[in-house]
Length: 451
Image (tube, helix red, strand yellow):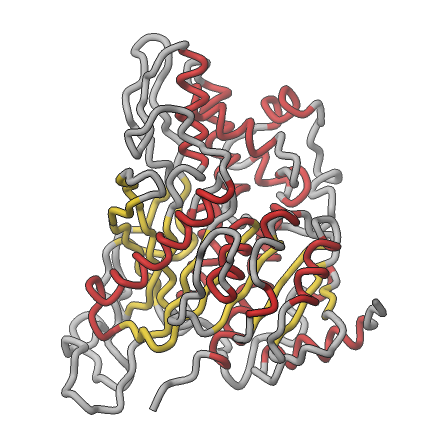
């Protein structure tokens, strides 16, 4: 496949920013390291700067799994607000503060602070309402009379990667919400890092200290891909059902897109095309999809890719599963599709929250030998086979506010210096902005207001 020149990329990026048609026949756009902000701030469909404050809430839903088990799903939702003041959001594991074995293992205690989100703000009302002079919040209740010309905010459902969490992407998802999207990200129980942490703890203790979230026998982190994919489809459907009950008409369920990373990217493909292998039908409420670094071949090619006819963007790194992604992309039938290749991105470069999580968990594990789950968090990040913080985190991520270079060396054998990180030359923070810019322009274009 012929690669476009950097000039061709610059043209392509500007086209994405302006919301122009992304054509199936075009060569993939290639993002160079020096082009993080090339062609931006966006014009046309996207605001030059985010217009909204970002609110954050966590909702709970119960989703029945493949074995009739009750799966308690935490759904992180980032949404636009006009309120300027509130408590800054702090993210952590579901296991935060849960007692383990006193005197032997201390409770997990790592946290990361939001870039911009604030907890429990009121969602901004639908377009066209007048502001309240007291606090900047719109004065109406957002419902409006039947038949008016107002519309709620478009929705993006985000599906995390295998053995990840929604908060692993919090920087990207906050930034997208700031542009006027409601971003809902379920934690896919049985395929999260919290499930893996429970298994690790119980194995270390040689007994069941914590039970699986769904009440079934361990292991909590299940290896069945068919079960995982069917569960994910059920989670997405349940989130779409619940959103109007949480936000009323301030969400526009006629304008729904989906994003995902890794297995979450495959989940988005599945929601668009369905899978006869797994017995999953396409989700008709989803009108456009965007995937970040697709999952492995067995997952991608179990999706009916030829059935995908809705607008599609796929981003992949040159240091990730590029061949698999290109093959999957070619099989998609949509005439409105684009493959964006990010130079020097590894698979986990798209996990925009991972540097902060590694800094926090690593510092706690260094200071407390009993912090078994904090150690597990740092260890998993620093030893992943699909990219590690050494690849995409800056020097300050290892030194501020705490120096985690010692534990990094212990786990990796690498002595971090100001000149050897990030090893790829591309930070996850820079990539978060690239993803945000493309996502905002793409979804603004394809999720048009329904008359």
